[in-house]
Amino acid sequence: MGESLLSRLITRAAYQPGDILISDPMQQRREFLAQQYGVGVTADNSEVAAATEVLLLAIKPQVFESVATALPSLGQNGPVPVILSILAGVPLSKLERAFPGVPIVRSMPNTPATVGAGITAIAPGTQVQPEHLDRAKTVLQAVGDVVQVPESLMDAVTGLSGSGPAYVAIFIEALTDGGVRAGLPRPIAAQLALQTVLGTATLIQETQLHPAELKDRVTSPGGTTIAGVAQLEKAGFRSACIEAVQAATERSRQLGS
Ligand SMILES: NC(=O)C1=CN([C@@H]2O[C@H](COP(=O)(O)OP(=O)(O)OC[C@H]3O[C@@H](n4cnc5c(N)ncnc54)[C@H](O)[C@@H]3O)[C@@H](O)[C@H]2O)C=CC1
Ligand SMILES: O=C(O)[C@@H]1CCC=N1
Image (tube, rainbow, N blue to C red; front, side, top):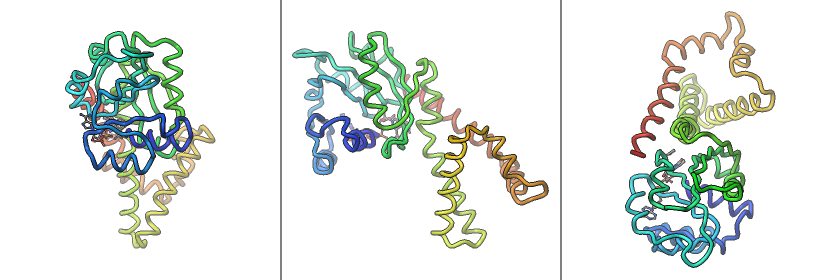
């Protein structure tokens, strides 16, 4: 996810590669990132503690405690940076205990950020002033839309839009398989499935139609669509989507505890 944000930030010239320093313990990753994006790299997390504007935390929640404990105090020799955390589940209370007095913005982006079509929810911590929030938004708006939510809703956001690209990808893959089963060559089925999802999302976005209204317009009496819809309902498609978001939300809560 860190690389998704990085690639778009550089493409949009929100930051110059020379102004970015990335710390990663894997040599292969460091070499790849330096070569691909021209950014500075280090294996020493404490070097990123010298960040002056934004310190993006993009590690796994499971290693947060050990990484945070090993970092020196932030802003020792200059301005205190805003910490922008994208960690699933890790609450502001835990982040603020690890970095006392530091402005922290908890956020949940998603992978369409890579192509500037992401959506990120943010929740500011207790030390965050309007200028800190602006700084965080500048980073995140370079990769898509930004919405602010109460922190209590961040796990639900993680279950929906954070994890959602995987659900949609499975749907596209499954539609493609359906086309293949119905006799279409796979490349054609894949193109039809992808453009159907993309086109429907764009149609709903541009017309502001309620999804149910669009469904009704496609569904001719006694026609093909209602036959397909009936099968989706029989297989519990809606329930599967609702339960998927719920399970991911609960997992997000677990990761932070
Ligand atoms: N993958 C996604 O779609 C999204 C992920 N996130 C969050 O982003 C974070 C990263 O997730 P992914 O990108 O999926 O994982 P990832 O495994 O692809 O990336 C984690 C990176 O952290 C590095 N790393 C491991 N230990 C480290 C340490 N001690 N110090 C510094 N770097 C270290 C790894 O080498 C790797 O490059 C997680 O907290 C996740 O909850 C948030 C939104 C969406
Ligand atoms: O699967 C995960 O834990 C991360 C958080 C949201 C999307 N991917």
